[in-house]
Image (cartoon, rainbow, N blue to C red; front, top):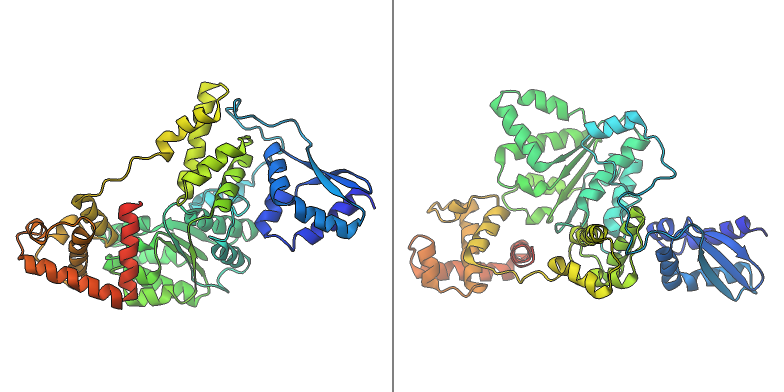
Length: 451
């Protein structure tokens, strides 16, 4: 058995024992440098891949090697290329030895579809926190419109929803370039509808959107309270769905938690597959940082990555931001830095001052959440779409800031303090009875205190 045969035999076993992401990121590109009856030496591209394999996969690799070569006692890893950049010598540019000329036609189609080529499945880190969303996203690229339609992906900000949505568009375009694909943020869609109404060209806009084979809409929660735009989107959704066109939506919450959204839209959004993305666990955060280092061709010691991963827990965007901030500072200073110096550089990002919550912040967040203006919360209008957010604002001021009933009454235009008491008690009662309201309150707390 030669090296290639041994490695292919080993790979065929490993790919069924780890996830696709783990296999493609850490194992697929490893080669066998040498082997004999007692040991196998694997060649890897850089030192952090070497360390990661030794920590996470050595026992698994050795176990499978023993099934092929029963006398093997150990497996070793070595770096098969020139040592990559160290922490103290970060380059300004990354070399691209295997650069390939992009397909101009595909590139132009991606531009037309509003897709960013850098968002791909190959650089999307998969963990337990986003496994379902990733699997569903990958599945619909094989047969758009025939399964999981619509696909509704939801989760808090900065967890990779936009990356996943754009990866879907990029993957489909590369495999089926004849399809008409469109990625659009909801705010842009709303703006287009408003402009079309103003110019009396709404029919032209409808015809344009009806040509779409794959519609990808980001941040659909911003449809809340936009009645005319909801109506237009409802008819577009129905047309695309009935003609087996793929629809992909993202939101920072589930359809039932989107306030001031028509029931018929909520029902349709829930009619396909809903997949949530939660906060990444520690191992996933480390994998994300390692993956970004690999992309940038940069080597950073594990203790630094561990420090970042341990201190930034709920936002992948902040995780990447901390890494980029560190790289920029080290590149600018061009000096070798100790772990303590690196911690000092990251202090501005990691050791954020404690967020001070006040009434103004709470009112702003609640108004934004429900798609209202702040002055709407203080009006005397008793429309249901205003009454509920107003009572929730009173509830938050009382429960979270311990503001007196009389002070809240004064803030809301001199209402009687018994009105405030009634509003707060009503919300408390409804939270225990209404699961949707409970979820809305929890989402608001996260936005106010953690956002």
